[in-house]
Each structure stands twice: as C-alpha cells, then as structure tokens.
Image 1 (tube, rainbow, N blue to C red):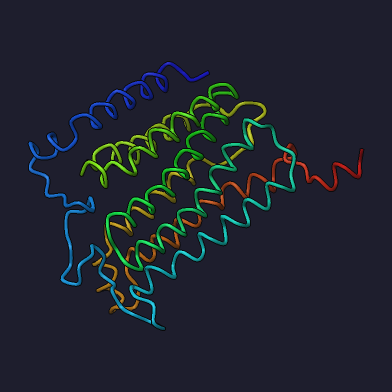
Image 2: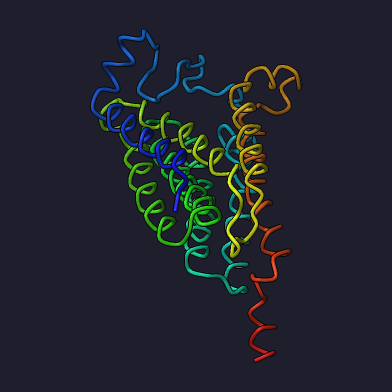
Length: 269
C-alpha cells in the first residue's frame, strides 16, 4: 500500500491532471505562456525548436536523430535480459513496459527529429509516456506492493498516453507537463520509503538523478551547442543520458539474488 503522504500526492496529481485536461489552454493563456502547437516556447529560423539542424550523411538533423540509437540498444537489451531472469509479475510487468518505452521512444524521437512536426512529436511523447508509466509502476512495486503497482501501471499508462496526444488534438500541453514533473515528484516521494522485502532494489535516486540531468541538457540545448563550438547540442546529449536510465535497473537485476538466472535456476531444479 502507498503511504498516506504518497497517496495524497497521487490523488492531488490526478486532480490537477484532470483540471489541466479540461482547462489547460485557458490556464496557459491566462498565465501568458507562449506555447506553439509543438508545445515549445521557441522555434529557430530553421523551423524546429532545437539548435542543431545539421545534415550529415544525408540525414537531416542528424545528431538529434542518431543520438537515439543508444535508447534502441538499451531497450532491446533490457527486454532480452528480462527473458533470462525469474521475477514476480508485479516487478516484471513494469520493467517490460519500461524497456518497451525506451525502444518506442527511440523510434518516435528519431521520426520526430528527422522531420519535426506535431504528429512526430506526439509519437515521441508516446514513447516517453510508456517509459514514465513503467518507471512509476516499478517505483510503486518496490515500495508499495503488487496490487498497488498494477493499479499504478494502468493509471499511468492511460494518463501519460492521453497527455502525449492532447497537444496534437487540442493544443493542450499542460497535462504533459503534469505527467512529467508530477510523475517524478511521486517517484521522489516514494523513494523515501523503505523498500519492500521482495523489492528488486532499483536505486530510485539514480533514476531521478538521470532524469534531472537529461532535463538540464534539454533546457541547455543551445548553450551546450555554443559551448562545444557546434559539435554537439544539449538535446543530443539528453538522448544519450536518457539511455542511462536503464543502468539502475540492470544493476539491480545483476545484484539481486531474487532475479535468478533462468538457465541456472532450471539446471538446479
């Protein structure tokens, strides 16, 4: 079960998210926020909101496209690793969703950066929505329990998926903001609780820290591009750092004796 504080935070996030879904554009307009249909506050002269628009090897916006390759690799490797270990369903399902999300994110992000448009951005966000849902459900499984984790996975998938498409269908980016930052706030709140005895042992602080670093690179996209004399942008580095989100999970899978290797377990039986 969730602690009282975590439950209240989750309930507050759902309430704020519902308000954002219903009144997001009006609230942003009243706040004077300058958000275009992409959900970004600024577009460069080359027509999309990222500093590096170089074409390399015939690939437009090449660095932002190719930097998604590590996400593809960790998504595939993580999904394969799960096939080789014994895990309880309450832990396996969030991890399956998490690694699938990284893989879908790599495809959606590469699609979007190749030819930026609102539909591509929705695909990009859909991958992130799946990843967020897996991370939130994994956190609840580690700290709350199987039944609560199953509920969290379903709710997070629905809320994040809807939020990913609302900027495209209703010019409403506010629910997506709530999902991103509210979801991380929930993970931080849960991280203060002691792990369950059957927890896999994923370092939630590392997971949050990697997300924060990726976000800093995203916000510093142009600054990093200038600091590196046009070698690499902050957004490209964001993709590389985001792939590191798999590291705390891999570490837990390797170190936790409950995640027994299937081949070893079968041989022993």
